[in-house]
Image (tube, rainbow, N blue to C red; front, side, top):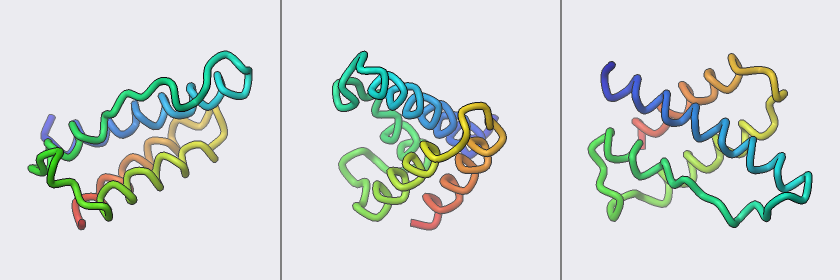
Length: 94
């Protein structure tokens, strides 16, 4: 796997994680802000960007795609995969 493929897989896992945490919040199990994986610095690192150099634009693109993932049907893994690919493309352009 190259860095781009690894980035896409990490973004996809983060999308799934955000969906799971949101569902837990809906069920009243945990507050949504209590648990964060912080995968985005690893994705940035794979793109050659150290955590302290992540731009606001880069972070906004990542965060916006995480929010898009919350709108997908829960069983639509293909849609989440597409969001991960698109997110990776946009991040490379930042």
